[in-house]
Length: 378
Image 1 (tube, rainbow, N blue to C red):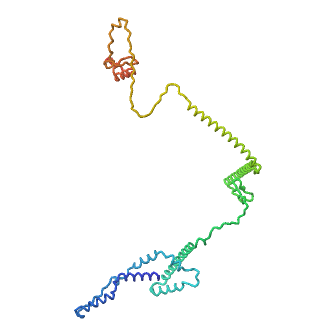
Image 2 (image 1 turned 45 degrees about the horizontal axis):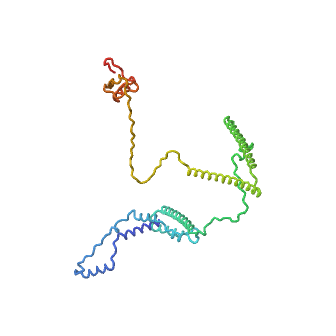
Image 3 (image 1 turned 180 degrees about the vertical axis):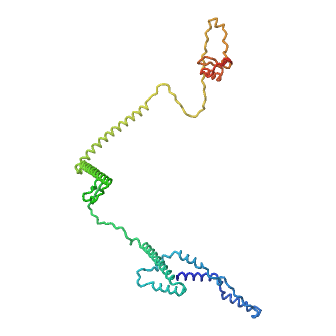
């Protein structure tokens, strides 16, 4: 509470200093004295200046005075270096803050005699709690910064044990599979002394026991199969080779490699001979029959058109006098348009003039048109 009162007093003092006018300096006082001396009017006729009442000195104290100062002090970040320098030690037996607390209590009691003693004690307890929390927070920050300030060479390092045994350690045992573990069947000693007489409970218990027996049998079969497989793999495992065995196997591999190399060389020679034979055949081949040769180069392109004369047909003289005297038959007319026919239908032999007439003939053949006896037309 004393800290709050001191802060409020400081804030009131600063505010009054900011609002009050500055005092006159010595130079200003001398100037005013000289002006008064040079004045021709008598001293009796001059009037004394009326006192000016300033708003900062006359107004009452604001209820919110010092709130901003409190918030600024609360939000101010503490200087880590200063805290580390003036840090308090919890184990310092030569220093005790009992006297300070007592003096604070006395100051509070002397400054606020009219306050209630119970309220002052509660506020003092709250301040002590806040101070204790602040000390703990500063101690934690101090520990962290002290840890960061330790040089790297003095910090704890991972040490490697160089006194290791030269012999190869035994491999770790293989973890057991689920089927290799111990049996889960309960022993007679594990059976409960009391059992429920309910029918469903007994049935479920019997089913569970039967399932556990089946699982145990399955586990034993699986374990037996695994043992057989391990024995078979152990039998198939080759014993370690001696130096003589390695030399013997190296000689066999050398013979096999030499044979494969000889086969490859023979095949390569054969391929080379075939390639040379093909090249010789290409260089010595001759062309049979007519050959068209194209010569490329610069020149003028000329187009030559070769026209062949058509052989003239000689008509044999007409020996039949009836045919010689007969007149040519007249041109037939189209049966649809009654115009001179230009074509004949290959299927029916009927003459027609154009495409429209041919389409009408096709419709007649398909039976799409019917004969009208009234119009006497299709």
